[in-house]
Image 1 (cartoon, protein in one colour):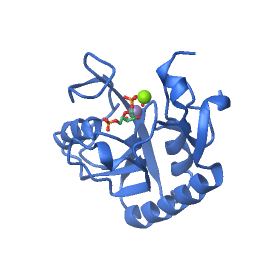
Image 2 (tube, rainbow, N blue to C red):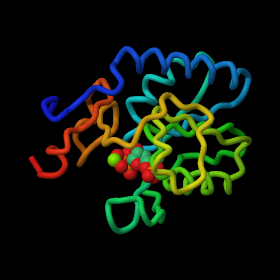
Image 3 (cartoon, protein in one colour):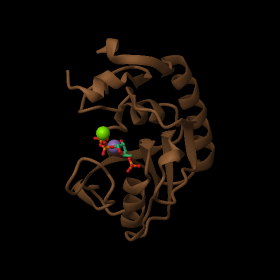
Length: 181
Ligand code: PRP
Ligand code: MN
Ligand code: MG
């Protein structure tokens, strides 16, 4: 697995430090508020698991899973909910947690969908922001790192469902995705 990583973009320690900073900021912003963290399956799981333990104010968390129609790319922007929240959100402040914002189409859909349910507020926390490929106008309130347009995997990010368990974010060697195996 690791022989397919060309370069480590963000090491474990860098991620840990930044996640702690984001947690502190979020703690300040949500003190005394009813916070619901909504993690988007599956990529957001490692980030979310670390982030919530750096948020020192009461919260609840839930998950959503979405999938784009048709091809495996997000180019259409047409998204379908595969797993939804368990409760209504009228009495909560929603913090959507993502591993990466790429085109922004997933998040644009999710935000519109959640706004329609009338939560008290909606903000977004992402570990990575890749603004070069943005197609939808979404800006995260909390961003771990802005990264260049490279094929990144690890810490939740996958290529063909693999590499999610790497404790760092690495750049995949082209040979790993140009030829299978
Ligand atoms: C990835 C990533 C974001 C989304 C970002 O998820 O985790 O959710 O794509 O892309 P976008 O900004 O271009 O919409 P993916 O659909 O690959 O599912 P996964 O989280 O299960 O890997
Ligand atoms: Mn995802
Ligand atoms: Mg993926």
